[in-house]
Image (cartoon, rainbow, N blue to C red; front, top):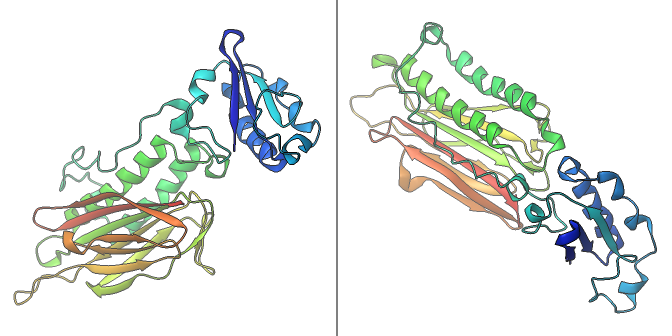
Length: 299
């Protein structure tokens, strides 16, 4: 556990953490936010001090002994760190007060069927490559492995990429070539890699997984923390005697996702040790497309 001792008038911020390993972990987490600290150079001294004998002797309740089991620093953002600070990695929103990104925000920003001259001639492989390009955009903004959460910009790239896949797909699959489409995005915001099996198709023609080789290993099928994977599924072409639908399952060690063009079929069920959040579940009124965003976090 972590308790705090704050002297706001002197702009000081002190944390009491009785367990030495957790104290070091907490220190390194704060050091990652050193750009928000008034004087990061003053941080290292307390954690290198005496061992936590005070805590071992049953004195863990007194958070005012700054010489033992504490971190003491000068901070110009004490008010920003008051809330939500624990020994686990702080989210960017808890430090910067950044509002959570709302997936689906881009769905009406670019109308369906509106294609530029290049997009008119897109093949399916070109559409899938758009997902690969999104990884480069996210890395350019901020290297994933140096963060504990995705930025709002990175989430907006994921959102707009999924939408553009739908938009261009419907613009290039018309009339006798028409096929429904379902785009699913799985974001691993947990603390550990998750294993993802190949999608199992119950209804529809096929699926395609698109991933970044730096965050997804095809051999072990492991998606690293902060990794993102796209799964695109599509129906067969028009059939005058039968309605075409999409239904496929994505099974992982963290969650099982059912993906479909039918709202009643869409589910995301978390497994032991994880939370599974359905951040977006959008379906067209005519069921030509569906867009599903799922984020997995650790319990």
